[in-house]
Length: 565
Image 1 (cartoon, rainbow, N blue to C red):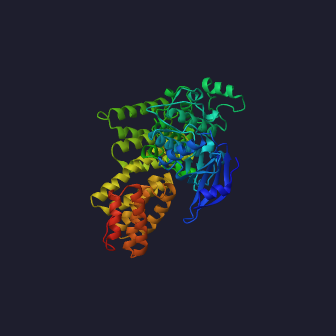
Image 2: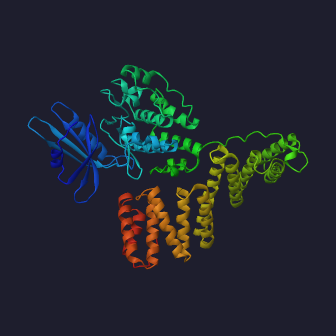
Image 3: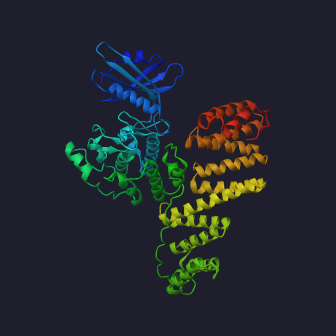
């Protein structure tokens, strides 16, 4: 499509037009910049002629997008219509957020499976928000998933979106991209619902994870339609089974057999990816994600059963200076230990498990899979008995040894990491209880211990690590270690901005505390600037009446050094 740039410029006098970013049958997308604010934007330009519906569809797209407010949905700033001649030609212009990171199609060759799953979570979140607002996208595909310059995925091009009427929309005409269209989209008069968008997302993930689409586009339209409606997708043999199960369920022919909604899809995908790639896997993707609490929790701890330990090989007398130990007796001691755990009122379960661990370590060696399984089970018992610090040390020892013996991606290694993360979360809660009880020294020591271990196990940027770092820094400030507190809070703030985003409540909490520490240090001017920024963001994100917003407002009016967050 060829457009007259001078007419577009006349329709948008407040903007300076830049280079062309893309084009298609829908129109042209140009880069632009607001003259006064120097803010970069994208301008989608469509030109309609008498008898065409483009003008109506452009206005509908703009209105739909203005009604959606989600981090993973492109934002719209303005919509302009301008008559260009006496023959009824109209210029339709949508001013929207500039996504300088390119399309998923362009970025895909650099993406591994973890990035593919992260994109799936982002798109599912966007769809969940759209569906809650009674909007179907109907054209989810790789070209309609774009990225900001800092790596945040966004769903774009709601040009053929449809408002849900009651519980379902009806197909009035066949629209969409055939390769990603659900079977029900091919027949006019069929009902569409959220499951229609999930089918398309399943097709996108199939392509990202397998490197090929479930069906070939190199065939006549009727053949492709028949495949979409009848044939099952080829098995995803090269993809881990938990992930393949989620994707293939989304590609079910019957909408009723797909996930119940986009939120359920996101939970299933997050859980499957965590079971495959380990806890906190999203942090290493380099993508910015805004996930709701339930989905984020599923990326931290998978909801799966522990895999059974591998069978024990017969012990070799040559492997130890101890006398041979009959395999049957070793197996019997394992059975006794398991019975003791189940019937604790008739047997000392901890004692039995300790004995079994000592026997297996002496005969098989400390790094043998069976010895490590026994140590893991002992750590579980300690945790159940409330011996968290002992459980923590043993879980951490098992994790280190499993990483060395089995590798970081082995299922048993990931299970150990999950359990250690859970215990550390409990210890974090213990530190919070100490703080509330007035033992700030003990709380600070425990927060710092959990922080050091989370850094080793989860990494510097993991959300749980940052939570521990924030709480440790707060305690340092109360204990007079103000230089340490400021340095740690500044580091946490930079990482939370990068991982969670500028407006996330946790990011704003850290910024608020850093400003408070700056007041204590006598840097009132810098503190006031930071408080003002936090206040503006909290008003926008939380609302004027939220307690956190009011607390920040109070800090701005308090005398220096008198405020307490």
